[in-house]
Image (cartoon, rainbow, N blue to C red; front, side, top):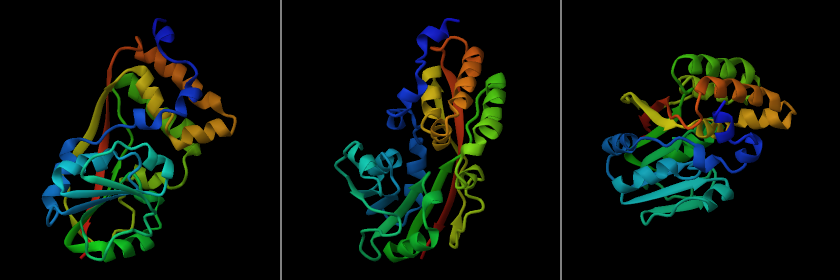
Length: 253
């Protein structure tokens, strides 16, 4: 099959360099919506910012943006922007003055937080009318037989290797404690058109895939990679992939 020659075969070697390259990016409409419900546009704070995917999108809408992450490695690999300051800090100890934040976001990160401690800090740094947005994206969807094979892999094959916190993402944070006045969020999704190598590179950023590899069960991913390659056809063909965006949005004060 022609795609075999075009697709990298040493998947796990590729995975160590894949996070920033293969993580899907949020749509600009997400940042525009968050800015529209904030009381003003003075300061947005992105907690657990990772490599700054959402942080970068907020910059055109706010006078200043602060990206915070406990990982020094993530902070060291962000793209700089004149309106954005990045700092290494945990969600439970936010380095901001009382009543200073117009918008507080946590994208694909809140399920790792100590939520009571985080919410205490949110209430402290929030200005009146401030908006808190916990954002996640759900399980991806492909077309037809590709999606059927992927869902089996996600649910039955790699599923046992997900940490317990993943269930909060799968439910769109619907079961997460959120003791604030809630706002309605419009339906949104992330959409990409990826080649086979990009799709498999993304899967290699998953903690579940890494855990399977560390447990000596590389075949869980490799067998799926073979199956999806056969269904995909030419590895350079771009396939549409979509993730639903889920949000819990409220006003802490």
